[in-house]
Image 1 (cartoon, rainbow, N blue to C red):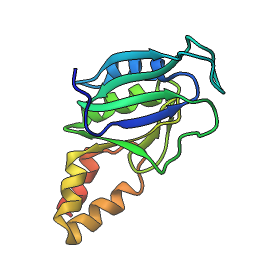
Image 2 (image 1 turned 180 degrees about the horizontal axis):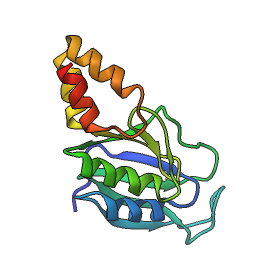
Image 3 (image 1 turned 180 degrees about the vertical axis):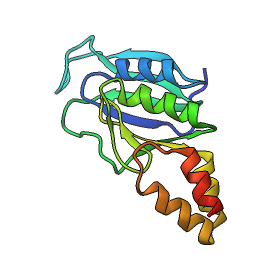
Amino acid sequence: MTQAKATICLWYDTEAQAAAEFYATVFPDSAVTHIHRAPADYPSGKAGDVLMVEFTLCGLACIGLNGGPAFPQSEAFSIQIATEDQAETDRYWQAITGNGGQESACGWCKDRWGVNWQITPRVLTEAMAAGGDEARRAFTAMLEMRKIDIATIEAARRG
């Protein structure tokens, strides 16, 4: 297997493997590809502990690093998932928030490991790209939401 030129590295306290396995069950084109164990003791773990997990997330090369509690996740980094319809939006939203995660505003939520997600219907992205009054109306509607409601965004687009 050839290593990707660019890889996203997500820092976890101790549960990189559990997170990667969860993502692989939720998102298409996702899988855990390798598990690397620490060859020696390190500041937040012991030899033999899972240190890194290589996985793909919707085809994107990722590494989960069990680095300990020093660097928690923050909203400064998020993973955006584009959805095609309300059923897909609902499914991903429920998977993330229903597994110990939490809702936030404007299509954002956080998984149980603290990773931030944007579950973003394409119709919202298209409305923003349209610009002008259509974008303003869709944006204003979105500001009132947690999970994005596509019917409300479509209605706002039409005016």
